Length: 301
Image 1 (cartoon, one colour):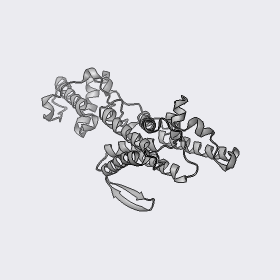
Image 2 (image 1 turned 90 degrees about the vertical axis):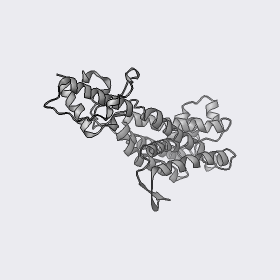
Image 3 (image 1 turned 30 degrees about the vertical axis):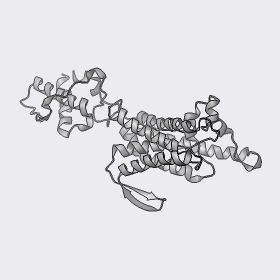
Image 4 (image 1 turned 180 degrees about the vertical axis):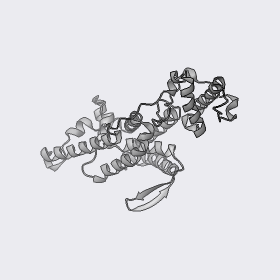
């Protein structure tokens, strides 16, 4: 039966009472930043320096990893500089504007996995250059770069308008943003960060971009556990179901409800499912989606 196939089960209706992952990340990250300021004011370090408690326990550094504080590979992304307001403002704006586009497409779990995966990958790449170092790195930049890279790969030709220096509006295609970010981060990591000419963690940015590429190529494009809109079937193909695409794909898909038999309808559904298997649910046109919707009612009787 059509309903028995796991890749044709309806995605659960979204719970309107659930707070979005983007909102949760914004609240958590900004809340931690406020906590940093509170600690600095309440427990100032000698000489007027920032209190190092949170940095010592939750920032990422070679020293912390050598001390087996492995959680810092993720926790560093929720800390930000208390001396530079634009550090957190830039990251949170990126999370908000890109996240509100991607979360409905990916779903909450997949978006969170992409975001945290970017932070983790950024931390790993940073440690490749600084495993013997002591300077801590903080910030959500690697995570934001991962969702930026994913968005640019998902919609490379869709023009977007950016505010250059938060003042000058420019319109550019995401594919060019992707290449500038990738090449620029790699160049800066090798020629500025590694020799010690820059304190910016360009290597972490590069790791986030790599995470976005990997997630897009090997998870999103492979159709691994991604849901579509709740009104459409959820597509998740098991390995054993993968089959060669039939040569009849170009046959007309329009179904005459009054004359077509159940066997013919089943054959048409099988062809459409093969197309989903090969190209994903997004490759279907409106008529094919209507055929699936009608087939679920007829073939389930």
